[in-house]
Length: 335
Image 1: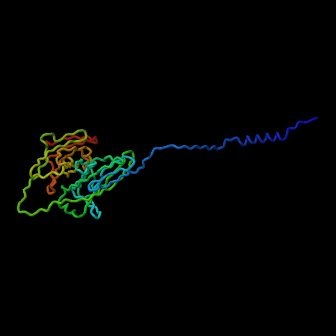
Image 2: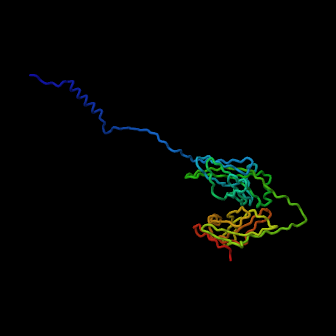
Image 3: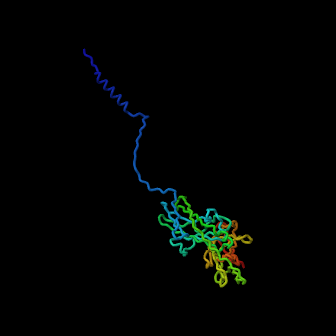
């Protein structure tokens, strides 16, 4: 009687196959790591650095060329002005020294309008420059900046004290980004200052005949005051003539109604032939009398002859800027 036997080789083959299946089947704890790489183009990004240069103009010491080397547009303005002597020491600009800045391709010909001004109050340095906040400056399109310094309102003694000191005017010119960034850069611009001193008076036995300057008066042909929502238009007249000193500029000054406080300069009108000026509520509120809402506003004539004292208008407008609305109301002259 015969007996069936499973071949040993067959059994061993089945066991090896099962072991291979178990070993190659991933279990629940297996970590898979797949990666992929690609390339994408992104636009160029501007850094937070303003490229801004101020250079002198050959043959025109009171002119400069402003260049924007940034990757974006900027705006610029003269921010502060000061004086230094030949040794580099700071010198306080005397009271009445007037700094006027013009801009444009041909600003040195004197026809461009004054855009920024600074009038030294005396006894302090530097002096803040007032005017439009900033002018645009495109990349690779330089702009001109010109400075005129007037000393007609500076007392002669103060000018003589500054003579022979080799004075220079230093203007801090600021540029800031146009976009969302808050980037800025400031560059100094230095020009020499030549003082023109009045001639020495020669003694004489004759007494000079002088005509006392008149005071600015209300215009006979138009209302002296008018207002829209946020600005008052002030008008005046001037009786010039033979023997009357020439006006160098006009000053608009303000003080609270019903007080004897000294008036505060609000703005300067550099054109001697002007007979009107706009004053905004914001300009009134920016003075030292910002706690007041009712103001007396007057016009002061400053003369080219340093020996002639300035004169104020014979009247004052009453102007109100109620609350924080920014509106303005002009009541004109007192009855």
